[in-house]
Image (cartoon, rainbow, N blue to C red; front, top):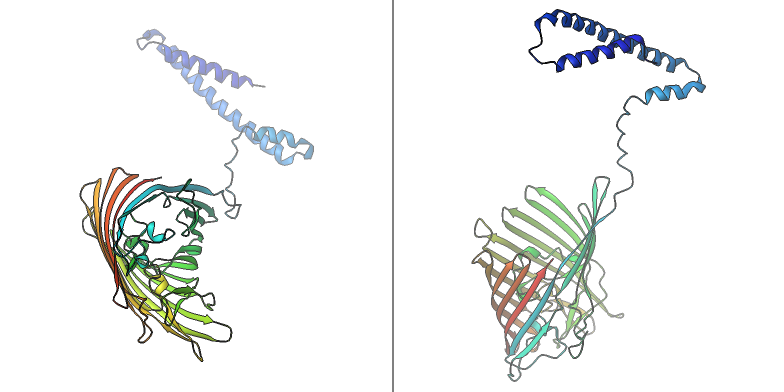
Length: 462
């Protein structure tokens, strides 16, 4: 119950409110009376504070001395006091659920091709994009051929989960550029999904299928084609275990153990086959240096090539180095120069879509592997005419040095190509492109073949 002093304080407060509402020009005769009331009010407030302090002290004493049966009283008194903020849960509690993102693009590709030395087989992947090793040689020239498809359409699903201060990620990416001969053009043009990448990362570690650590993807130029300057490019996706670490400002080092797949050609034959008898993973290392809008890369590859035919077996060492980069030519990043130069021995499957075998297989009383050396590279100049209009001019080449005495007439010796394109993007997500390409392939025998192709693409990215 409210004490008499508390009632008096409330009445005094009411009187004070009434006084505050009076006009400033109240009669002077009443000032002395009001002043007395104010003094009385002050005294009542002092008494109220003392009453409240006595009540709080009594309640604390009761809580401390009361038996268990009186605990509800203590709870009732404490309920009037705001509860403290909850303590955050420990960091090792269950991880939050993953955040999932879907992106990719829809792409239509069309080409008109003319081959100087005969047509491609109907199932050749060379119809879908520039594969230098498929350029026909030593044949009869025929008229142009037209092809169109949407196989390069791409879908990627990624997920991210925070785990106790770390980050767990995963990515799955597919397109429809599957093996040659899958699908048809006669009725439905139905093509099977083809796996591109599928990997997991945990902070600086990556495990799964990703671009080879020997390849510098950022150097690849914009092109209507699936790849572009194929013969001069390191190009491989495969399963690997990779670790990446920053070693200085703007400088990172990545090392990886990657899936091996030695390819060979028998002495006297130009046919390249894949052997499934490798003993050790391919080892790669790459340094990346970021300089503002420019980037530079230096990569190395070491591998052991092994062929086991049961009764006979041999191994050889393969190695390669590759320098690549993207050099910005203006402050806005509209113009740049991209390049890649690769040299090595026993690395044929990594460069130019396996234009050269890793090694030549010599059969006899004993089995002997002879690694094949090569040098390849490309340069691409990108010019941004406006914010919506841009072009890239590309040149690419590869030279193959087969061991003396083992080069057969049908083996590839040199391949080169040049191309130029024009892209228009009315909005950021939509690209229209047209490109012209000329490529030439020369065999060890000196026989050549040429390709001229005009390409068109329309791509909507999301």
